[in-house]
Each structure stands twice: as structure tokens, then as C-alpha cells.
Amino acid sequence: MKRLILAFTLLLLMPAAYAALIDDVKTRVTLQNSQRGEFRQEKRIASLSKPLISSGTFVYQKERGLLWRIAKPYESDATITGTQLIQRVKGKTIVKVDAATQPAYSAVSRIFMALVGSDWHALEQDFSISGRVDGKSWQLDLIPKGGLFASFAKQLTLTGNSHLQKLEIFEKNGDATIYEFKNVVAAGELTADEEARFALR
Image (cartoon, rainbow, N blue to C red; front, side, top):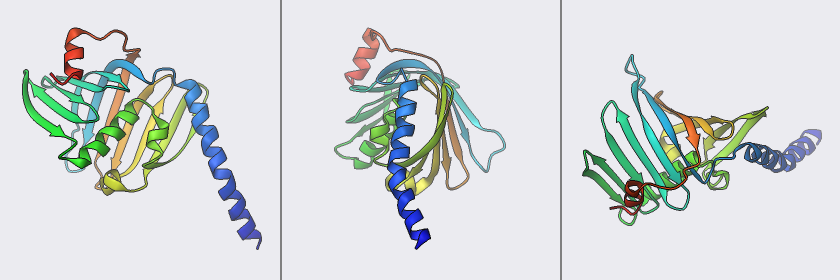
């Protein structure tokens, strides 16, 4: 009976503890709905001795989407919105995905933009979230509840302060993808080129 009471008490306390954690992180994240900065992406493949590394810049606006530009090792860019993904190389469109015909895209784009934008309410639909806060820094561990991410990822770890600094995706097959973000600031006024890309032109 004592064990049953303890388990029930812990179950009641979990939502409160989770809410307190998220509220604590929110007070530290000042850059959320609109930001731009630099990224470094490292893909670690279990069967390869060296990781695959790329770097570039990004612009994120919650209501419009994400511009993702790779500068090295080769130039390419992608526009990710709630309805479409367009990837270009040297100005030529090589990939175009419509959410209307590819339902899985909607889930992936929604989750990835929520990760970059630290949208916890969107993320809690798909992940169980735990973590800790240490001074100005925080770390959250996300375990997929189901769906597309659960089919290949076992855990996501987010680390940051006033903005997301690192996103780590650990896959079930032993591979991992690590994103590091730096020089992140408010997006401010968009350039004409950025406006055109968000307009999917």
C-alpha cells in the first residue's frame, strides 16, 4: 500500500515539476520567435571514422519558417515552411516537397522549427521532456513519444542559455547529428533576398 501511495504521489508531482522546469527555461530564453545566426552541423556515422561537417547561416521566424544556408563544404540553401521545402544549389531548385502530397513533411518541419525556435508547447506533443537548469544555462532531454522521430531517434538533447546553443540527435542505429549555434541575434529586418525566399520565389 505504501508503494502505491508513493507512486500515486510521484505521478501527481510530475506535471508540476515539468511545468516548473519549462517555466524556468523560458525565463532564460530571450531569443525565440525571430532570430538569425551561424550553425555548424556534425553528422557522426557509426561506420565512418570521421564525422561529416558542414556550416552556414540561418534565419528563423516563427510565423514564416526557416532559411538554412550551407556555406561549406559546398553552397546550398533550403527554405522550410509549414507548407513547403525548397532546396537550391547555385540558384537551381533540386528538391521541392509539398506538405499536401507528403504528410510526413509537415511533422518533420513542425518539429525542426520548434526545436530551433525553442517552442516547448509544440515539442511536448511529440516528446517527453526532462532536464535541469544551472545558473543561466539549461539542458533538456527529449524522448520521442511516437511517430516519425520515434522510428529512428532515441533521444534529443538541447543545451542553451538565452538561445539554443546545441541540438544533439541520437539515433537508434548509433549515428548522431549535432548542431551548434553561435552569434545568434534577433532577426531584425529581412533583406530583399530573404523576403523572396520566404515567399517561396
